[in-house]
Length: 386
Image 1 (cartoon, helix red, strand yellow):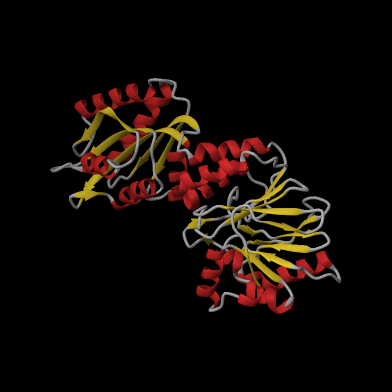
Image 2: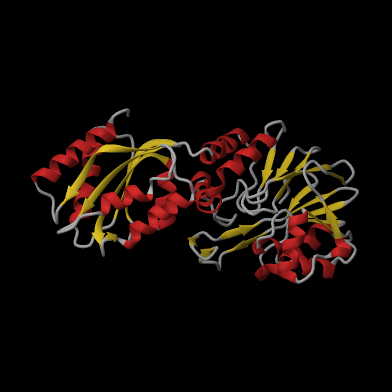
């Protein structure tokens, strides 16, 4: 696949993987992207997962014919992108490895060598000329590892964005970009919003006509759309108006209350209502939508003097990713010593700009007249402003 006349795609698709990074469901697989710029000098961008060594090296050989690469640019040291550095050097022993100083330190940890004889250390603003193509390196620490660099080709105006602007899913599967890119971003990069904002500021002065990420498709059209989404996500603003109801339920009473609240919200004109049973859903999708929409309801039982385990896990996923700038409503169920609402509120107390609804729904075993009235009041509160 040609990105431009002189930039070629040499990555691979992985349909054998079930969990990315050991936790994210990827029904449509993953892509491990690698690129080549063919100029007077030749640069290869990043390697691929260790399970695809021969396919990747074959892709490179097919793209280059009798020529050999001059540079291997290592933007990110996660093994799905760096596992084949040694194999690449064995095949092309005259190559120079271009990376940040921190990347070479991490190479030492992975491979017991920092490839001193092959090193070309680059930092913020350093350039590398390939001929017509001049590459400028931009540091992007904690997007989402500390050694990350991204690379701008001023000739074709292409940004090689490392893990930025990536998504779940192999490239031979058609699916909505935003949905899987959002789940990918929030799950993997979401904690580092400030660092993404810093990178976006660095990129703001560049003319970008295409983005080449390490996962997902090359982005060539409407670049402002993708950058705008990253700005929204990394500043922790709601992307859309709506309410997410996340619940756990033991005997069905909390479930009934959550579903009744959803019905009331829809009847009152809420623009979007999404309901998740945290014990059964894809947790990453529930987390994704909690960040996507403007309001959230947490509904759970008191359990072992705490809260139900799936709810605790869900809230911890939110707080470790800096959940903020949202309206949150609370619903609790408890037959003799309800404490869930208090505990959930405490778990969110260090989150910035969380506005809790005045109404808290208190269910004692099952809905009754009082708790049903609270449910009405909560639905009224949540619908204000829509």
